[in-house]
Image 1 (tube, rainbow, N blue to C red):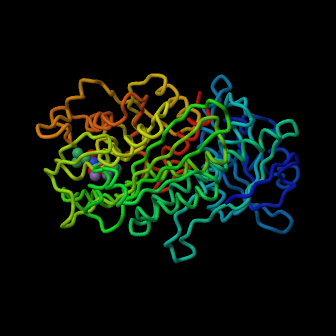
Image 2: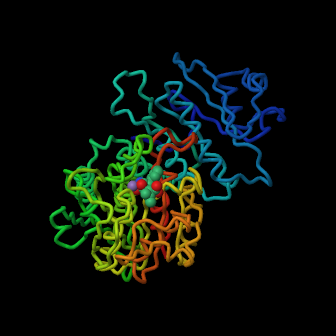
Image 3: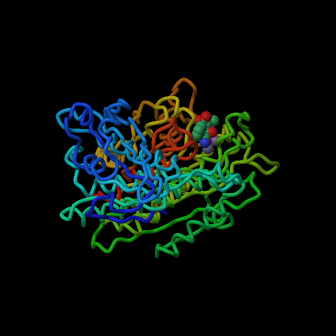
Length: 508
Ligand code: BES
Ligand code: MN
Ligand code: ZN
């Protein structure tokens, strides 16, 4: 938790461990006189500042950092100068700002800074409103502040976190900044909450345990919730979810959370998440190396539960149903076998050719449930569904598949606003026959000659959404262990959380 103060005063009048300064390219070396905020620092605390910045060849290139220790009121503090880069036609991408904020927070905490003060840059450089800039600041600071320390016992190996931030702005902007920060911290928390669940070991976050988290959230935030246990899931005829869970000693759960807006005649959207708390592959066992990170196979469900909490606070003008299917995929004498045929909640059947293609089996029931009980205006599902996804798109883009252009446009828009990026894969009908079976309605793996397993898996899901406008997001590449970015750490990223919150907030 970061507490925050918005100030109209000079940030140097606040006592913190670290003072951050955003510097545009060439604002130092080329200028005879430093920008106003740096002049202030120079005049009051460090007369050699301009010379020091020039001597340390700091030019304000994108993400360039210099750290200057100095004494302030008898205490050692640091100034962190961070480059925003070259403003082409005076405009910078907002993603640049996100990364700069991430780097600033990281740099501060690397110098054991637990409190940080900085003034927001001019929002016009990024062509956004000040409220939006403040929101991005809070989201990214919170994300950059995340550590998974639960099992680190050596104190110095734990990452340092900020606990206080002072944000400078002017009187005219103060209210908008406050609003933006409040929303942003809420979103950042949601991202980190999802990351924490994903980072927890699979034995410490089982299906019943994750479903308990959802219940706690629902209770605290006044969301309606229904939790179906394995017995009920069997009785309802959800052969996909029950089948996948057969090899596990633990109960599978279907968790349905509801956020209702006060707005009259609002639309209803459903978010559906894959929650395999550990994917061993089942009897079609994965090789050891591929299993190493399979605690992350509930990233979709974690994201959706965290999103529901944020929506209860941010209150968008749309009803949102969050449905997550939670199970373990394990081998045992009771486990689902290749060759088994299962019957789903909507009556369709599938031949299980490979028990490692389990995600589509549990999602089939969850999607059918959403359609039957809520008749939503749109469904978006989020899943670490296929190993082919990171091969096709890498770690920076979640795969987006849909045949509904309006929905796709809305998702692209939310991706742009949130920085939680997506890229389209072709959900073209030519792939439709890839999942034929000779003994059931469908096969759970696609024929080899079609390739594109990420797309073929989406066509499997399509059989369970009826006519509902639907988009599928495969986050297998983006959810876990992406290459270093200033606001990510090794481990879970919370992919999809920012995207779905922004989608709900802007729903029309
Ligand atoms: N959970 C995996 C997909 C996955 C792979 C997620 C790597 C994250 C990183 C999924 O259940 C799976 O095992 N898919 C198989 C299906 C195959 C057997 C048809 C795959 O894509 O390899
Ligand atoms: Mn699998
Ligand atoms: Zn899986």
